[in-house]
Image (tube, rainbow, N blue to C red):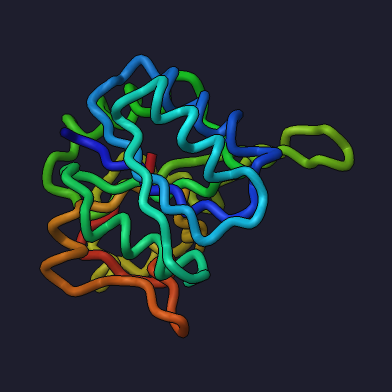
Length: 194
C-alpha cells in the first residue's frame, strides 16, 4: 500500500461525504483510508460506517474521549501501513487525479521524506476558488535539504493536508503530534515541492 490517508473526524457530517467521495473516487487505488472519530456528537460516525460498507479500504477508529485533531492523527499514524502518509481534514476534498499525480512525482523523487504540493481554497462566503501561489518558483520540482537550503521555507505553509510524509521517517524520528506542537512545523530531511 503506497498512501495511508488519515482523517480526524469531529462533528463534520455536513462536509464528510464530499471529502470521502473525493478520496474513494481517486483513480489511484493503492490507498488505505483511516478515519478517527473523535467522539462526535452528530451523525459523523454513522456516515463513516455507511462509507465503510461501500469501501473496505476505509478503517474506522473511535476515540473513547475527545482527543483533538493532533492526537487523533497520531492514532491513525500508529496503525497506518502505507509508505506515505497524507493527513486530510474532513472538510477538504481532493482534486480528481491528485494521488495519480503524486504517485508519478514520487517516481521522480524516490528518496524524499516529504512531498509538498499546491492547493486551492474554496471561500464559502464568496463561493470563489482561491489558488495558492508559490512565493519562490525557482525551487519547484527540486529536492531540498532545508538545513542547507533556507529557501526551502520560501513556500512553506503549515497545513498538514498539502504534504505527503514518508511514514518511516516520521516513525524513525518519533515525530508525532502533541497538545503543544503540530507536525506541520517539523523540518524534514528532504523536501520536494511540486
